Amino acid sequence: MGFLDTVIKDSGNEFASLVSDGVAAGDVDNYVDTGSYIFNALVSGSIFGGIPSNKVTALAGESSTGKTFFALSVVRNFLEANPTGGVIYFETESAISKEMIESRGIDSGRMVLFPVSTIEEFRTQACRIVDKYMKEPKREPMMFVLDSLGMLSTSKEMEDISNDKQVRDMTKSQLIKGAFRVLTLKLGQAGIPMLVTNHTYDVIGSYVPTKEMGGGAGLKYAASTIIFLTKSKEKEGTDLVGNIIKCEAKKSRFTQEGSKVATRLYFDERGLDKYYGLIELGEKYGVFTRVGNRIRIGESNVYPKSILGDPEKYFTDEVMAKLEEAARTEYSYGN
Image (tube, rainbow, N blue to C red; front, side, top):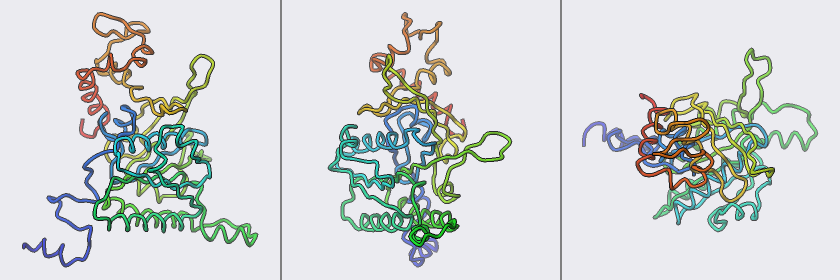
């Protein structure tokens, strides 16, 4: 045993290891497919990737942007990809129901709903679950969701309200930072991905219109990826069927910050549109050629709507390989 091995053994730090052996809390050995190829590319640099399997990913946007529906779409995809896996869903808005879950094709028998109202309650419950999970002899795949951080209160704020004190709680930001400082390391060691939704607000007095994420700096430091979401409506005829979600990587440890994509989120069980956004990526890198308002494929000119209506016909293995190369060039570091 060399000196470095002795240092690790004597440290008593269960997270310590030689980098050559793999850093359990830092390495990403797999990803959670989000159900959208283009969103996968935005957060991992690969259309076949997704959110990292052992880190915190934040989705931030204004009210009614579709953050919850977005998160539920990822949950459904995670459970479908992991038949023995489970999801712990920390819910702060009392907005989730059995009908909502099952109508989106999610296996409600493998999803545990944890209503939480304070940061302290969330921290305690989450850390307790991770500690118990780490003691399991056989650990099945697990995913955490917090929806949403912005609605969490603090014990002090709750006490002030009950005592009719009209004062601002200045401890909230520090409590959030402390909670994620502890939880992030535990999640990394356990290999549990966590998806956090949060609200954004307009920064008053900024020279250029700017959005900021609520909750102070705690989540900003803890999250490996922060995606800001904005939306526009998607209709089929006169019926509103979903949203076009514009996604911007405000922070990323895996892809180029500032990158932007657009994906389609349906309100029904379809969730995230798997192929939406790939045509535009393909056009930019010469995989597809636009002729007027159509796309040239082989000897035919096809409307984009027809391509997305029958994606398996047009997105062949050869085309997907070219799109993967384009995604790595467009979003990954070093390209």
